[in-house]
Length: 397
Image 1 (cartoon, rainbow, N blue to C red):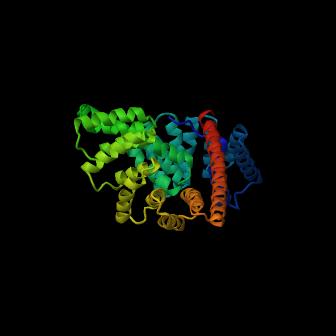
Image 2: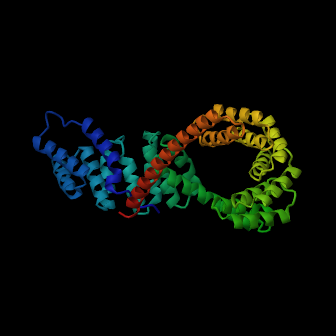
Image 3: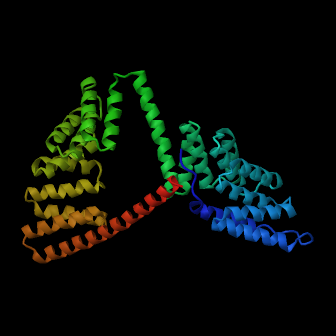
């Protein structure tokens, strides 16, 4: 179960809600009293600053003077929720909703209060009401998914979390909970598969895929081998085995596995591509060329295959043809990591062709793209560090 976000992580949402409350609420002129208005403003500022005890006292004063002021109940509920007073917070949110049924955020925070007391049924109902009022509220959709996960209903969590991720694709909290939901459902499916038929080759295939995704390549190889023993002609098993061998740098065995896959399924383009790639990496250009040419015949825009075709052509001395393929790669993907590698290969090719000026130009482009890639990686690393630090704050309130 995920820890309830700390106040400063919720600050943007709280600030938005408070702004809405302030902007949309004016005490009736004939009833307004400066002291009540002042208490509300002071309480709102205290809530924003994280001084929840002070905020509660200020909103107490407002409610004493204006018992029909829905926003005062709502803000006091926010303060009480941050203080861990979930039952009192729920009562305040309910009061706010009785006074103003469409008050933005009230159903959401009521649902969160119920969630914190493990009342998942009422939490679900409250958050669903919020979503009905604001169908594109990614935060509300996320919390509905969180509630469903806590209630042991990961299948029900997937739809709202997928929608939340669509609305906020870079929100790491949403992506985290979405990943949990999908992983839980997948694990359940695999367990049910195993219970239905523990000797099925499909079980070993799934385990092989799971181990490969976890970078446990030796375990993946063992599972794929078991699956192949049970179903030696089943499609994709040798491809998966080849992938595991390739990722563990056992290129000779990977080549054998992809070759067997193509004997069973001659139209498997990915097995064909990786077979060609491995042959180039092992310096066997003559054997790689027909495979890669067949891949590009079926899929002309497969730029990675074109890169390896260029390298294979260079290995057999077809330098002009290799140069043409490399230039097409750069044209298709001019600023990519693949273009960086292609410029390096062009530099080597131009040395063989005794074209020093072209060597210099190619290596300059290689260095430029490498510097840009290093800068992006550094920026991404900083973002990952920041996201990790924020998650540590959430999980250790």
